[in-house]
Image (cartoon, rainbow, N blue to C red; front, side, top):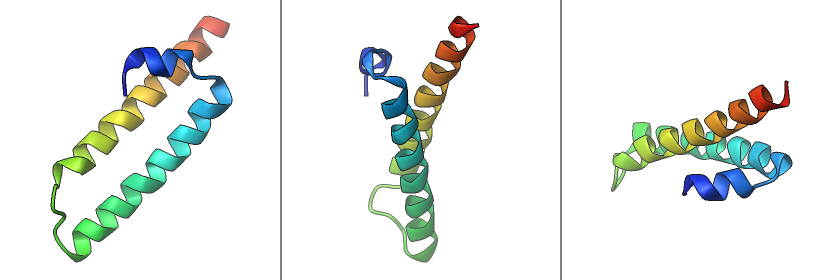
Amino acid sequence: MKDTVLTEMPLNELNDLLLSEKERLVKLKMSHAVSPLENPLSIKYARKKIARVMTELSKRKNTAK
């Protein structure tokens, strides 16, 4: 997901996206613990996506002050 897409998203959608990505990461970790994933790098990509969303949320919080 591009940064421009994240900057254009409303705040409530960003929060929903963050929750869904965190749930997805937990599911990926659990399924990887049970049996190896076909692409274990998907865990890395999920963590990075969460970090991007959190960065955008903190940018908005800091500019609102």
